[in-house]
Amino acid sequence: MKTKLNIGCGKDIRPDYLNVDCVKLNGVDKIYDLNKFPWPFKDNSFDEVLAFNIIEHLNDAYKVFEEIHRICKNGASIKLIVPHFSSFSCWGDMQHKRGFSVESFSKAGMEKKFEVVRMRLGFPWWFKSWFSNFANRYIGFYESHFAYIFTSGDIHAELRVKKNLKSS
Image (cartoon, rainbow, N blue to C red):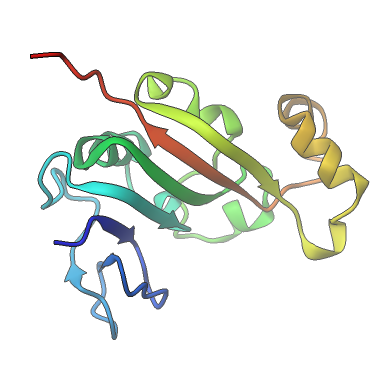
């Protein structure tokens, strides 16, 4: 069994991953509606999960992260891209259910299940400048003071799964 999972893969098929999407496309290994819980994977099955531009399309992001936590091994790497709340594409796409803040991954119990390894705001190619560096260095300040003036595109994050392992 593959120990790496690519959810909502679309046409981004990865050879060493179990590629999951709700649509039958070339290379998709498993067709499944990720809005249905529990997902059809055993507990502690995966070392890595990719979730690029999919979580914002699902009905309940919190349940999605609970499922990711359940199916991942302790220390598993979660790599994701989600739209920043200030992004035009966040609210311009009618299929998007929500936007995200960098605090989305450190509130509501998320900090007990995931460690933020890396977090970076993406900006449009023409905006890559000193401001992008400033915003990424002071993300909280950026979000509370500048996000709706100089909008970000998305959040690129890597999380690490934390599980309480009881000794036998």
